[in-house]
Image: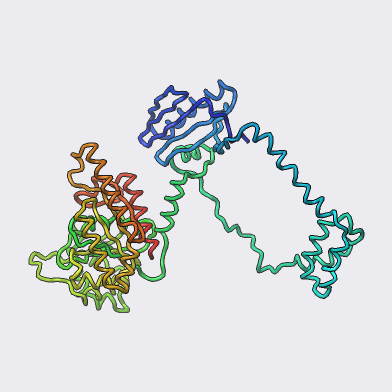
Length: 481
């Protein structure tokens, strides 16, 4: 096996990017790499590094950088790659003294065997009636005082054997810890695909844990309410993203419900099915849907399936007159129907915490989510929303304390912003996130993404960094289930 340590000379840095480019820098001299894909970039990089190791006649230490972060590898003159172990910065003097410090270890044995064996006899005489209890003492004495025991070992098996017997109930041949899957991303993942098994980075392990969290199934349905009394706070995109991630990873039947008291926008930002039905049509057919003879597929005539993101949408009433406001009783009916057909319900909401349907939604909620963009009036509205719930006490207050706040960077004229303006937007998002952190269970930041601004929202249209951030947000929500 190749050594997992190497001299930190020459200084070698290797960068691997997702766009098929990279570079290897050796003692300040940079070699740019451009290839068809990530594997070809890695192959060229390894060739340069291996040539350097062959010229030196020894393995070289390489600092790697990829979208997952930084790492250290060792490359041999033969091109064999292994994970580097950190080099402890100890001096030669400290290394020379290590054997000296370890030498005193035999002393305790000399002190233990120095006293005469007579004092050890009384404990053995105090417990003659309990040979099983005495076995550990006898076993320990046989090890410590073996030279003084004489023929005693002949009787030891008869005493020790009962203590070593175990019930088959306490024995298992199953391996409780699963084998860790090799890295799949960045330098580590590329090397694993070439046959050099590499452990995943901390970032990849964190992503796997978030995926595991959102992939769970919980006993009984769970209802998530997405609330902020201010319009333009990113409620609808939040509902779509949470529904998409929970449905994609868990495989659980998931519905996004637009619980606006009149007309909401969830239907505008998602796919429409082959009908125009809304929540009012579902309520009108509730008796049939709740009957013992109803079949699961019948719900499809009232909801709109999202073909790529695998969840359904229950639209709000979209009649032109807008003459109907959803009541608390209607929320109860719709919720009863949906919990019959779905495991997960993610509810969009209107902008008033005083509306009857808004308050009844809170009654059914298991997890509260408060989205906010990095604009001060949206943040203030979010704070007041949480304050209102907290002041009501009981279930409402518990939801507020256990809430997840999702802070999205401002989308206003973002594409025309200068570098300084972008930095100020990020700083404002961080300031708002920090302000909410002491008051709720979790705060997650979402980067700006043009795919969330206009038109139908699709998870696959998001940039990788945005997808990762929404996965973290969904995991934070799921931990509250």
